[in-house]
Length: 119
Image (tube, rainbow, N blue to C red; front, side, top):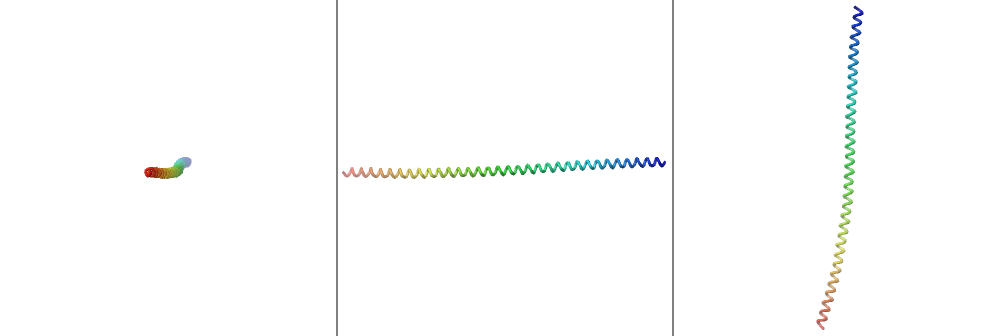
């Protein structure tokens, strides 16, 4: 009877030990799985942050390129406007000189006609 009681006690102890081992193993597996999930989430978040940072850098570079292009375009426009104004001014000056010369020639012709008529 004592031997039977000892054997049953050992079996019961073994069962409890097996249950405890399985529970520990399940808990460890759950912890590993949880850590892997957390690592996966952290990795995804880091990747998202890196993508956002790169996107922001690319947007900033694009904006700077547009500003630079606009500046160059404005400079070219101002240079063209200045050249056009200079040409208009130059043409106006030439027209003024030509008009003055025509007026002088007309005055000479009238003077000659008047002189001729007096004679």
